[in-house]
Image (cartoon, rainbow, N blue to C red):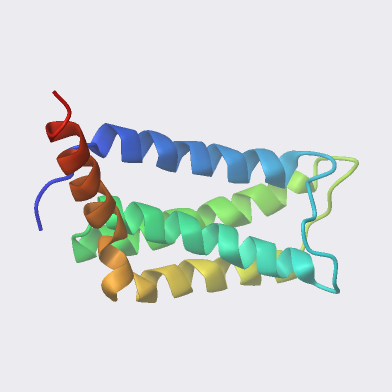
Amino acid sequence: MRPLRFSKLWLTLGWLLVAAVIFLSLWPKPPRPLEFEQSDKLAHCIAYLVLMLWFANIYPQRPHHLRLCTAFFAMGICLELLQTFSKYRTFSHGDIIANGFGVCLGFFLAKTHLAAFLTTLDARLSRLFSSVP
């Protein structure tokens, strides 16, 4: 797999995703785009799936994937613990399970063709910018 030409861009976007998850986890009234029972669990799962898959694309070597899995799972637990210190958010074992499920799903999807979506996008951007005079 060739190195990413725009790796700084992908890393910056990845860290912005991490910041968004942290912000939304600690903000008093996070947006609720879906309104059904336990919809927040789906949102937790998707958020951590995206984080895991995004960084697994940046760091395609398998040993990094286990570290990413551990880091994102720990982040989810820490954010839930931090919520206990607020007056407006609560600790939830269900959220931790949803976060972990998202991380694990991202880990396994990183072994599929989805592991190359940033490489494909990077190559397309490279061609686009190399053809600009």
